[in-house]
Image 1 (cartoon, rainbow, N blue to C red):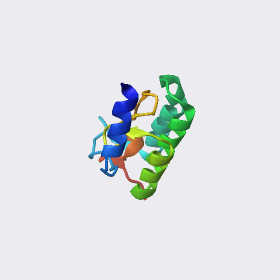
Image 2: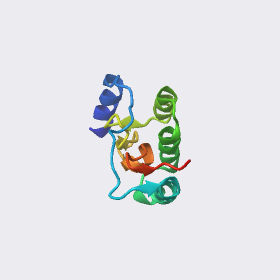
Image 3: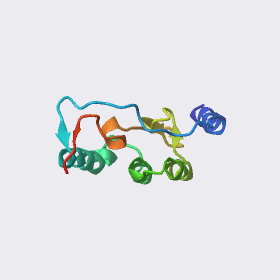
Image 4: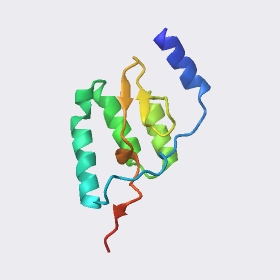
Length: 114
């Protein structure tokens, strides 16, 4: 059941991935604080379940500026994208991968230093 629907979803989906909508952190944060939050998430992500290879592909895609290359990374890893902003994805065995917006896009209230 899961395999058939996953395959149909993958073959039927021709939407390109996109960055999540703009979001705002509860208080302005610096680049260093955002980087720390991201590192903590990626360091602990394998503990949420799923395969390390999929987490690695999701990280590579999330950190890639070129969305067409990010799309290629996702497709090559066999990731099934549920939300085209990559916040919810599945692997081919049905394991769910949830990504917080802060690993996918900078907040609108990021403190910009010069």
